Length: 210
Image 1 (cartoon, rainbow, N blue to C red):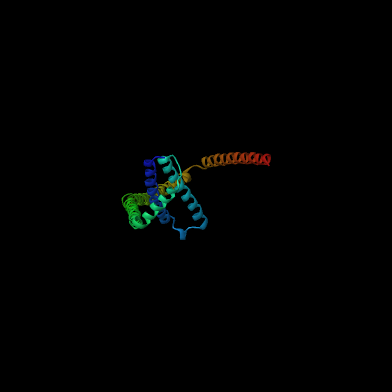
Image 2 (image 1 turned 120 degrees about the vertical axis):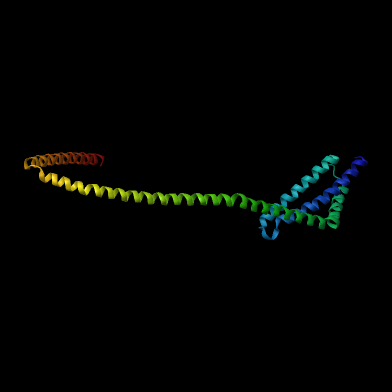
């Protein structure tokens, strides 16, 4: 390993140590340990350490083909210590500002969607329902009014017509009345026979099904 490669390896590992510190604080901020179950915290910790180890090894592989040296671990510790001493407070403040900014933007977008989309759509649906109900009530009232008018017209027409037919029936000769009565009785008898025949066949069909 050449001197330049060793120097790049040292700088890279110092940077990875500082990056590890920042990633660890970010992980702690979003994990919220007191509110999580123990097994969830355990799984998340294992995944976090595996991912960090893979990132560090991949960086090391890019710099010196993955050769491990004792000073690499010292460089990682130096980077982590430098982050804790000089950059942790600044990074946490920036992280919190970023989180609060994202939350504020999310709330603003949600509020705009609620004002510009949700409320107009709900108002339009309510207006359509009100219009439909109003039209339905008006149509029902109109139908009732027309039905009453028709009943009144029928009464006005039927009452005089009934009296006229009754008077006309009284004026008919007795022989003609008897002929009409016979024809009526015969027609009624025929209808009765047809009805009984239909009932008879219906009863037979039911018995066959049973």
